[in-house]
Image 1 (tube, rainbow, N blue to C red):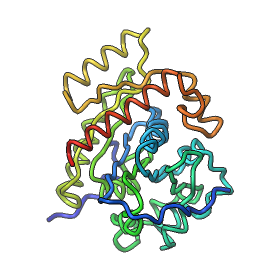
Image 2: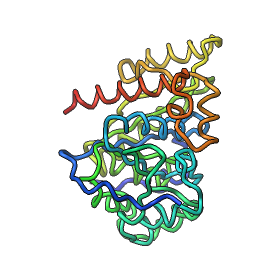
Image 3: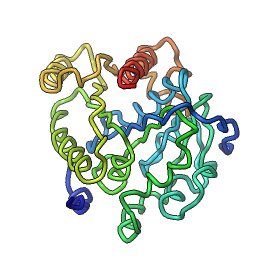
Length: 284
């Protein structure tokens, strides 16, 4: 089997408390889902943290913040000085993963946070042994603690995202309902296929989530129509609307369903969580 062309992924488009109440083993191997899109500003991190919060109403969930910006950690109430070594410590310092977990503002939702050190992680990982498997090795001791693990990937197809694709079972792609939205998705799909062939035979596309949908904008409807015409049932029925409450909630370090439960944004993410759980249940 040919090795994955890492240089293509590097250059191509494509105080929180330490966890205490997670000692009970999960009854099955968790579903591990990478949330990825190499295009920035598509609602990837917003979807990661709010979907994680919605799922945590029913399951034990871990959100891995693999984006050097660390916005998912902030959006779940983790101040910068509360994060410790975070995911950087697991990837490059071989720190015990259990010591890097932090509780979020949402019950049953834990976070492995990101800090500023993660910005240089891709360059530092180039010379590491098993560089493509660092995240998989780090998550191994945690698998029996959670039902679902979500990974918020950076807006690129670099080595950090590659690590997420190697450990994940599937990829969820937020797709912004804007002009040029579909550009680049084919590159991501090809990258998923390369990882599947070289590293992770179980990897597949979980689905595409349409985000920032504006009912007042004909373009949003056209993008949604094009996406469903091309990807069919792989596009989730639930669409995430443009909603100011979503942004306001993040500025307060809370998911939108805790900040404005009856808002259209909160209802949409709750519906998305329910739809995803239904899909996962069908797969067993």
